[in-house]
Length: 360
Image (cartoon, rainbow, N blue to C red):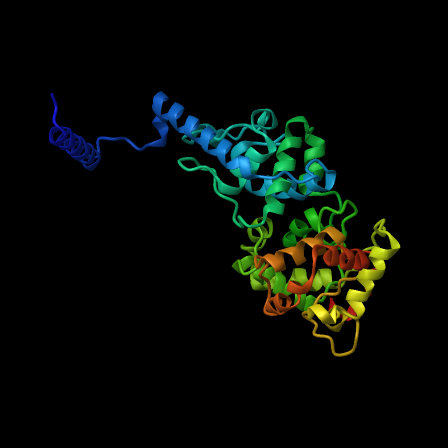
């Protein structure tokens, strides 16, 4: 009969033998040989179990399959995901089959994984593979946008994919700046979007746009999509893009269908504030008055969903931004979800504020 001391000694010797084998260099780590079949099966089984468990606490959003939600992640998928997973335009990249393990094609992802499970995979990434975690894990809204896109991808034709990923509103003829062309994929040539997938940036102050791009680039403002897009921009490119979009005037969006009482409450917050909750009037910083700090953005005509999302991020302490973002941390604690819905609906109902042509 083996005693406990003999068993313990056996385990120690086994561990030492494993360390000696690893030290010898005889275990190949080259990706060309792939995993042993048993290793591949065990790792994938463990991944499935981990994802299934983590997904139990994930709550799916109501707007999961909305067209604007799908569109929001298309350009990012093309820029950062299609290289490994392929797409309706490029097919299966040849390099993918030389990775260990090979990244799976996504033709049946919506059938294999539930929305909550896809959320876990996109947000957390997968160890022992090339699948990275989302750059800004607290931006659940962006992760859900990617989940929406992945659910729509299997039935997407190449022409539809091209329009979603590259956009159809290109910069004006004669404008050959490749950085601007890249931005126009999502934000259009005039900085306004007709599908509501992206915030309106046309006509925003040049200083605000410049500070925002720099904040995305250095990570002080959290965004997995915009961090990837802005990180490689030079200061000169940021200045060019900021000056261009500051000089645009996109058409006013269609007013949101809101009840009069909601708009009235939103207008009160915007113009008078909520003194009892120590919330100042929004117009004190964002209104069109003389002496307004040019780094503060106008809010008139901005998409309600975008403004609402930003205020909730400020309340959660995960928004970040330029040098003046800290001021919002003192404003938002007194706003309830109903207040946020009302004030964002009010600003979305207003026509976009005109900008001076001299900002270009």
